[in-house]
Amino acid sequence: MFNLLSSELYKWRKSRAFYICLLSALGCMVIIWLSFLLEDQVERGNIESGVMGFAVIEPDVKDGEPTGILDDLDIMQMIQVFVGGGFSTLFTAIFICIWVIGEYTNGAVKNTVGKGYSRGEAFMAKYISSVVTAQVMNLAIILGAALTGVAVMGSARVKETFWADCLAYAGMQLMLGLAYAGVIAMICEFARNLAAGIGISILIAALSSTLASAADLLFRAVHIHFKVSDYWIVSMIEHCPYTGIRMEFVGRAVFVTVMWAAVSLFVGLMHFQKADV
Image (cartoon, rainbow, N blue to C red; front, side, top):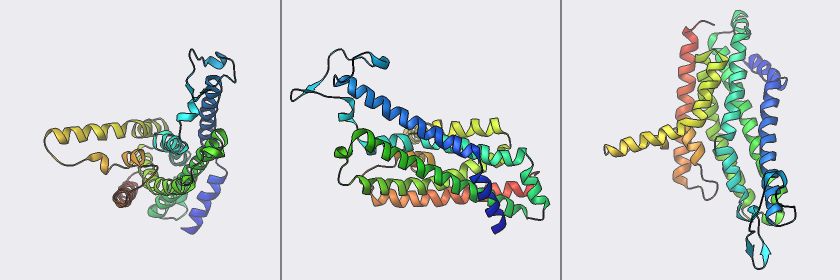
């Protein structure tokens, strides 16, 4: 098992898909932050109106000085948008699909089983490596969003509790991301087709939280006091508060993480034991 994990981590370090997905995510964040910076400078009159499509008809003024969009932004709020708003989950899902399904299509999983490793060991190695690599990507995206935000908005806009809030939020998202990566790895094990796996994973990342909220409304309509969104991993990632995290949310997040990690691991392992390699 240790040799399999070492092999998986070696392949991950050599994986172009990981670096492409990570650099794409970081690049998109930088572009978004720079667009806010450019719009802010146009609104303040430091750059001519109309540049790059940013036009100001009547600038806002406060205390005799023009204001910009950055005055209304909070770095932690933007980190939540990048990480909890479907941005991080989307790029993580795409990479895991390429990482897991690619091993089935190129015959690597079949070769692993053919070398004498049990199916359980083969699945566990791929499952654990998926979770670990997803956590690295999540952490890099969180750090990238935080550092880019500080660079764009300036250290003067950093609140005293910023780094503590950022650390607490990162810890929660990394914990929830563990179960999320496991769920996507399970889906990929079932799909075994790159197009299908990516399609299903994108739907889960983009729409499942909305569907969970719709289910909440249906339960409320029939007077059932149960909220699906309180126990669905993607909804928890999306609704994780970026400041003032309460112990009730922490306890529920731990339960949801353990539950979905156990479900994805058990279901994926049972299916892999019986399905064709």
